[in-house]
Image (cartoon, rainbow, N blue to C red; front, side):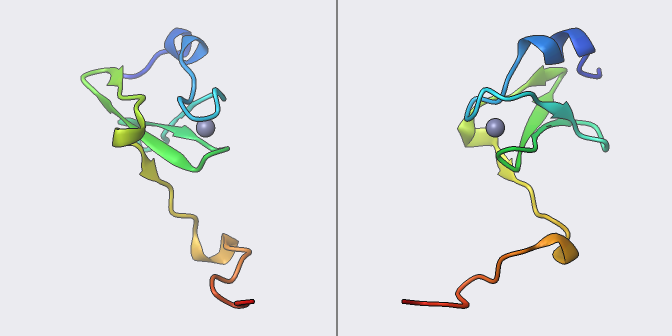
Length: 71
Ligand SMILES: [Zn+2]
């Protein structure tokens, strides 16, 4: 059961209160601002930090080098 547009207008990211977008692959909602992915189970979005998964950006889109500089 897909998440409807009506539902998307009601719910928001629990972290930033921003708008959530449906995952193109289905079964999840995505907050682009937080780079978090919230699973949807039985049509019900699990909007809790416990269930959020970090989005992994494509390698070519990673602008920061981790650990490049250590003061
Ligand atoms: Zn967010």
